[in-house]
Image 1: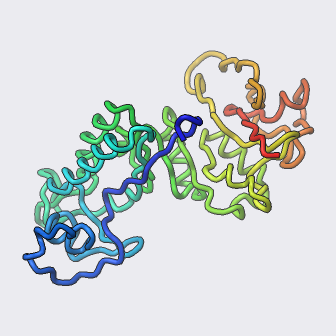
Image 2 (image 1 turned 90 degrees about the horizontal axis):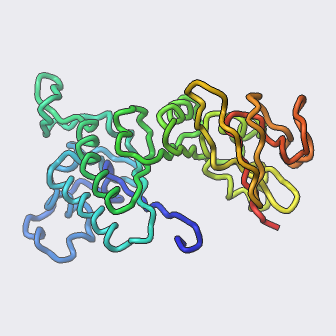
Image 3 (image 1 turned 180 degrees about the horizontal axis):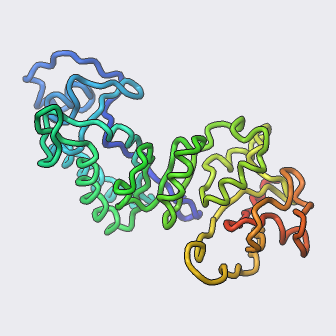
Amino acid sequence: MRAHGFHVLHYFNVTEFGKNMQDTAIPAARADHPALWKDPVAFLKLRLSDAYLKPPILTCYNAWVTDVGDPAYRQFMLDQAKRHIALLPDTGGICVDRNDWLHLDNPTGDDGVSWVDGNPARSLYRSWIAFMDELGPLMHSAGKVIFANTMTMRLELTRQLDGIYNEFGNNPGALNASALMGIRKPVLGWTTNEALLEPDPDSFFQRHLYLGVYSARCVNAVTPGLGVNLFEVPGGYAFAGHVRRQGRLGPGPPPQLPRPRPGEMRGPESGRRGFGARPGNLQGRSAGTSGPPEAGLCDGPADEFVVVRAR
């Protein structure tokens, strides 16, 4: 896929472990069994016994919440990252899911800072930061990137991240916070279904373009019946992409855009906010826009359209 211009990120998760987990007793004699890895409950209890919060907390797919601050579990996950680098050299990197569990504390750990209910504890915020301080240099030295699903909106958790993939792009608070945390990082907001675009798809795209957030399901809309995610243009479909932010926070005039390359459409950096055409009709222009129709597709500060030749 890389040879064709696609950059694949593999799924990664440090706060959840296993599937269909049940808190059953596991004989210690199984610890050295070569197939122990096939049983996530046994593996966790016998090899990484301090990695999960107790009593177990069930999460998606009945996995258990884990604390990557545990030294054995931290090394286990770093070893996974090393195998990713060695065995999947052509992938772009990883995307780490579910940092919403970081609001919890592990009462059986001690990070040297946290104190909960009169006892030392380990904050999963501190666990994430310490782990990422090791994971970041490891991945970056291999030319890999790290994206994360920032379900917990805290700036200090993004230090080692190269980009943000927010699962709740439909939530105004999450969308705004991701955009602010990603002023100098790419941000994707998951559009869970086409109904989120109603009743005004135009405003949906305007909002994302203005904030500099990619809508993560645009390309899926090429499928018949999901066209609300795309603007139909002669020869294909256009979706918002390659958002520009340079010069927006500093003094001086806005940057000048280069001439569009073949297969792309851009709008002028005029400072107005709004689309020059409605979905399915990119022949129109917004009031006050001069020039040919293809020069006035978007008047906002983040301004690029990419045309997908889909027909």
